[in-house]
Image: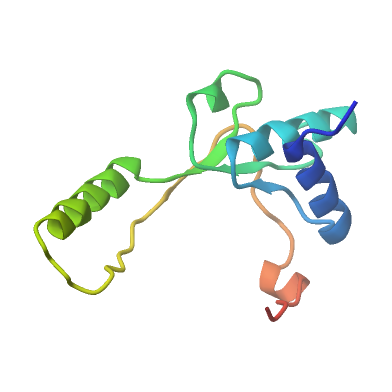
Length: 126
């Protein structure tokens, strides 16, 4: 059976880095959970999992998945304002804005006790 994209990404990332998974999409979160369960790992006893972009289903399975929650209403408001400005012939340069995510700690993570990531893994130039 072919490997789901989320599972494939999690396996490749884990093998390459040895670090803990950070799932950036819901598909990757599902894949990470499947990969960890198949490996016999328990959250958060053996490994922590942090997802990006909160979803209702993150609290439907045990353990509940910790996440970085994006302010989607803020994104929508900003996109709508920019669209309306463009439709009204506003030719301003592209807007750069910053929104703040919130960390939602649930059951899939434990406090980190190791070295800082910047000390443990050298940054790679792109």
